[in-house]
Image (cartoon, rainbow, N blue to C red):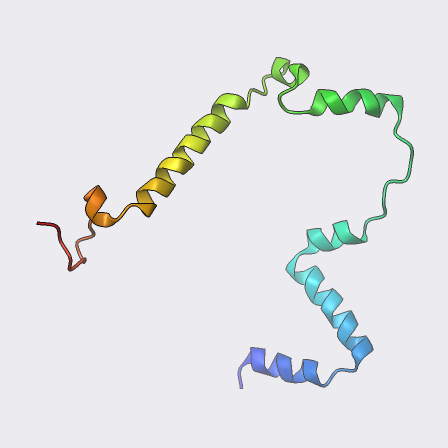
Length: 109
């Protein structure tokens, strides 16, 4: 019996309350950030005037962000173009692109 099978066997023997605790522990081990966010209290304090003024300034693409050097339009356009080229390259049949791996048995004539 391997470790995974042994763990499943032990889990099957747990009472419901201990099973719930184990699930919480496993979720924390696997994704501690998601667990912390899920358990974090909601922000129920009213937004201050400083916070209200800071939110628009923090938005990428706002004039304030652009003035600080955050220019996202060109980098995003270049990234989108590269993604599109990659998708097109992998979506095209190998015979259409002329790309054949040496181990392929179906070479174009």
